[in-house]
Structure formats: C-alpha cells, structure tokens
Image (cartoon, rainbow, N blue to C red):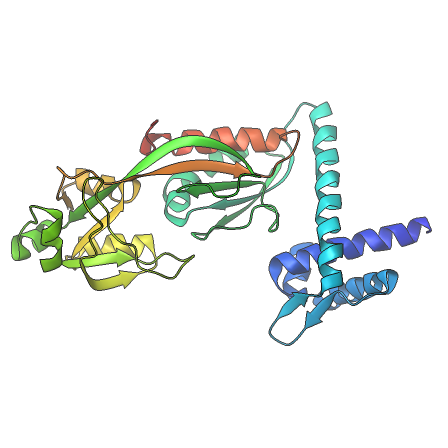
Length: 304
C-alpha cells in the first residue's frame, strides 16, 4: 500500500470515528472542518479500501454495519495510540498543550467550572478545550472524551477515575410556601405537600426521594422538571418542596431565599468523580485540567 493510500485510509478512519460520535456526516464535517460531502467521500473511499459497506444510512439515522463495527473498534484504538504519541511528544517540551474534550454536569459546570475557565486558559494557553454540559452518563471512550466529571456511583470499572469527594442532598422550600402550606415534620408528611421532582435524563424517570433511615418517599408529583436550574427556580417561586444537591441550593439557603426542612433526617450522599480513558500515561493537559476542576468544585464537594 502506497504512502498516499495510507494517508487516505487514515483520513477515512478519522471521518468514520467522527461520524459515529456525532451521528451524521454533516456534524462530523463541522467537527473536522470539512463539508458533509467530503466526509461521505472519505468514508466511501474507506469502504472501497475495505471492500465492505460500513454504514446503514437513512435520512434520519446512521448505523454501523457488522463490518463497520469491526473497523470502528480498530479505528478508535489506532486514533487513541496516535493521541498518546502526541502526548508523549508534547511532554518532551514539558508543557500542557493539545485538545481536551470534556463533559461536565450542567449545574456544576455552569456555576463552578465555566466561571473560572479564564484562570485555566491564562495558565495553559496552548490547551484547546471542547467543553460540553451534559447530565447523561456519556460514554467516555466511545465518544472521545478525555475528562468527564461524573456524579453518583461508577459502573464501568475499565475506566480510570479520581474521587473528588461527595455531595449531599437538601430538602427545602421557600419561606412563602412554608408559611402557606406548613412545614413537614417527618418524611411521611411529604405526601400532603406539593413536591417538585427532578427527571433523570438517562432513564427518563422522576427521582424518588430518599432518607437514610427511612423508606423511599415518593411524595406528590406536583411538578417534574428535567433541568436543575429550573428545579431551583420552581422552589424559589414557591411552587413546592424540592430535594436538590447542596451545590444547587446552598447559596439561596444562606441568603434566606430557601429554608431546609426535615434536617433531622439525613439524605444519601452522592460521589463526585473525574473519569478518563484507561491510558497508560495521563497527558499533562489532562492532569492539570483535573487539578483545576478539583479546585473549582472544592468549596461545594465534601471530602468524605
């Protein structure tokens, strides 16, 4: 195989991986700085090289064939090795540089990480960041992420992880709501209150409130929302009682805009993790960004 053919194959592999990650040729083109048709042509040439059809393609979906799955699995490994080579070369110069693809939970990212990104970019101007706010459990390796800030328990033991600590949940409501509807004295009292629940984006199900020494309490599903900030504003406006992460409501509790209820009943704590692919060597850019995130959320994450 000639050198130009090798380069053409590599371009096709890059296009294929990007198309799988983004879900379409046009989206892959935007990510790669190419037109959608250029991505399609690169994949067509790759199909010719492999003598196999790699995608089932309709106007609304893009799905790998069985042959495509085989090529894609090897392509992701090849590109991961190339990324490691870039990292080692950059480390010869002893500096953090290159691209980082990052996933952050929406509220933690918007409130605590994004406002401090200027500090990171000033310290590491050669690191290019692609930050996505997402409350789903993204696939780290398959979607090409270098760093993922994840809440809750970890399920994929093949990934590397750094535990930052835990966050607690607070049951609270506005003073106006409590003045009108009264204050619950025990978890069972929630059945007589308007409860505003969060809908998990991964499962599509409303959260079930829990207290560590009690059975789970469903409360009345007066309102269900799929956004943390919307949950906060619902509580502030007096719509009902919420059970929310402490990092979402702590400042409003301190200012008196919300009041905790059922404080005598402890709620479960959730883990806070930085997760990354299982590389043999962590790139400098990844390491310094993890340190930055740890400092950014340190005030709202408990050590244990």
